[in-house]
Amino acid sequence: MRLPLLALLARGPAHGYELKQDLELLLGSAYPQPNVGQIYVTLGRLEKSGLIEGEEVEQSSRPNKKIYHLTDAGREALHAWYEETEDEPRVRDEFFMKLALAPQTGLADQIALINKQRRQYLNTMRSLSKLAAAEDRDNRIAHLLIEGAMLHLQADLDWLERCQEELEELE
Amino acid sequence: MSEGPPPLLRAEGLVKTHHGEGAPAHAVRGVDLCVSRGEFVAVTGPSGAGKSTLLHLLGGLQRPDAGRIWLDGERTDSYTEARWAVERRKRIGIVFQFFNLVSNLSVADNVELPALLAGVPPKQARAGREELLAELGLTGKERSMPGELSGGEQQRVALARALVNHPPLLLADEPAGSLDSKGTREVMRLLTRFHQRGQTIVLVTHDARLASAADRVISFFDGRIVDDAELDGTPSRRGGTSGVLELKD
Image (cartoon, rainbow over all chains, first blue to last red; front, top):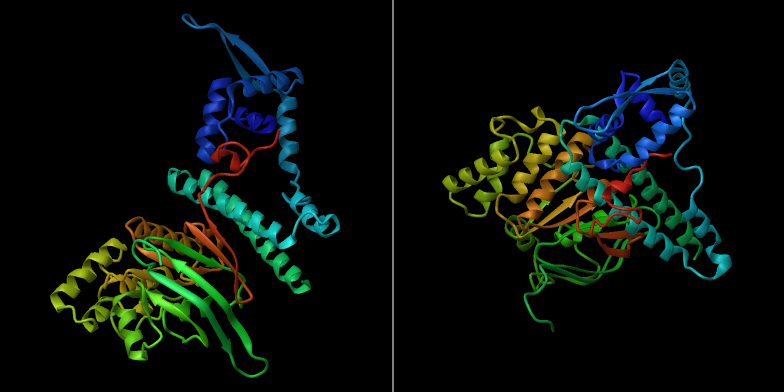
């Protein structure tokens, strides 16, 4: 969560709870509700590494709050983040290892494994459909996030189909 | 055999082989299937797996080489083509990938025609058409010709036509197959809505997103059912639904 928090601070100073709310609002229900404790811990680490700086602000009726702003080093880290491309999400697949090794072990049937995995993907797909239906129509970012997950799943399901086609021929 | 009403649709030992040029294609190779009233079943599988042939058998558009089909507990073996045509007007609605609208009839006429053919009085047919078109967001398009509409709109007209006689069973053959992702979502939303009102649906699709709208998914491979799963929409292992998408760190 380090870099998303830095990215939110690029806009201007904010305190921890504001950042939590901003993330929730931006990403919608598809995103696991960020734990506020986790956010404070991350902010602490970012401060320690000099990427942000905090300033205590006194509040009359409540405990002090800390407002953070981005440092030059933080801005540079953010630049570097945007410079890099990201790894593909599927370079290593635990399911594939199970499938590939199943005949050697004699412990699982490949087609049964595929069917089981497909059920899991389909159920996840259904959850995502429901999530999409429940999400605020105007929250484009949240919808894109869900659609991305669905397209990945669709590809996984297509690939399971390919596995099934190939492996059934061998039987 | 069992208590309660018979399944809306039942098939046993269905076989269909296509004899074209070259080797015979075994499109459907022994399929048993039961669909209860109110169910939404999706049949998925790669193209060429025979799932469209299966749907055509279920709608009487093709006849099986072997096996039997029951509609609402009634055997259909002795049905003639004409009888199947009547069933497709009254008890079975069908939508296709390429809409199959009558191109030289207006939207209104396309939807009203099956009602009139089924003997519904014209006034009532018009009322039914108006209601469905409004429901499907097509009010104002009554006078349009199918060719003037977008793909998504044409599929909605086709859906209205399929449902105008309130058939207990709706068959859908790749209904989003020629639509963009917006059209696909629209079809998905509408099927879900009709299902929530009790419409029984059998949907054939290779699109898992569309299939996930159903509450039961049948995986079809090489002419056979290889898996038949109820979807409960229970999210995967990692924590609540929101855990489906994760950020790293």
